[in-house]
Length: 239
Image (cartoon, rainbow, N blue to C red):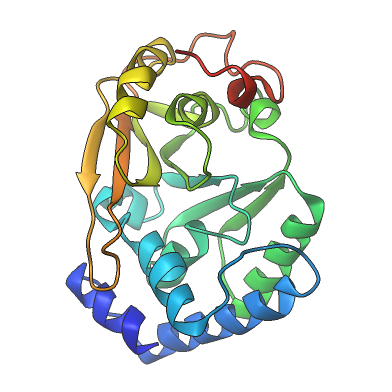
């Protein structure tokens, strides 16, 4: 895990030998699980370190003291194989984490790997974001909402901002030129209770492909009409 260790240091994160071993275990479980369930197209050892683990850790600046202490929670929406949530949990074991995944087989993998890694305070939620976000137990309950999905920014805003508490943040991990996407999404972000979105470039060692964090701050409650029914945010983004 040399690539991960060096890149993490650039982000101000010093991983312990025990944490590096957890990442090794996670990698092995990811490769093994990928043979049974389509978890990721990236399984090369070096690429997983760069494009999965290190990419996830670029969220470090958004982890406030209240999040790091476990007083406020983080949710990873559409987590898939546990990214970016599980790398953050390994690096910062005191955070309180929820992993939201719609596919039952992927959720089963997450339960398995959380057990193998010995992680505590990790809740795995099986369901679609459009439905779970209407549950009072999860709606506007999180200080940080993260999503790595490849959906448009307008769709991601509708799938993430309803989970964010007022004063919290929703962040989409993106890459490439997103200027047009940003322009088309700002009205949706404001409609959903967010303020002006901020784009933060991230470029630790090995991640030189234009990756950015699009940070949306929740400034008022999301109207009760959102999110719309399952599938609608992706099919008809709010623009």
